Image 1 (cartoon, rainbow, N blue to C red):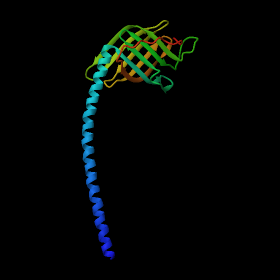
Image 2: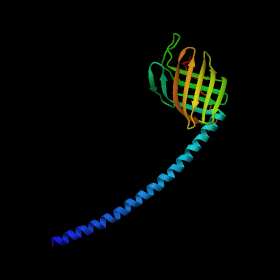
Image 3: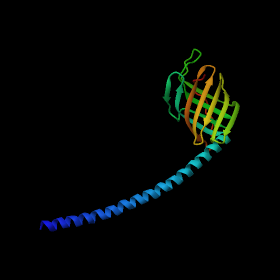
Image 4: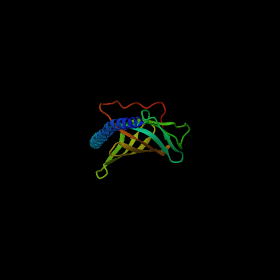
Length: 192
């Protein structure tokens, strides 16, 4: 009787293991097919993103949302992207960005707030790397800011801002294209 019990257990194992093996093989095959489709769609997504970035930069209608502030002496600070940005809409520009560093003057400077027109605007495209470099000077009420922006083909950005009354600071962020005409916001009460 014990012998029959072992035979039944072996038969049950075979009945259980065989469908499990087939199911595992099917899952593996379907996973390989899906990952192959993902690679194709990733490539298509990358190409579409590059096209969107190109159109936004060349039409001068985009927002760069900053996520980090890098200071020469103090390290880095994480920023809120929705509250720290450069907006370029045609011949208008607005800057709203946190600031920490050396400053000249009596009033402490906690942020850069500016809305104005670029006095100079120069864009260069590096076709081999797919990057754009934008150099512009934006004049506000009290000061002129020099802004240098390097935009990667995927929309990642490095921005450097300098002015007479502040140290040069560097920001990293992401380019977001503007789909509709957006009003350039007025700067807040804090101005430099």
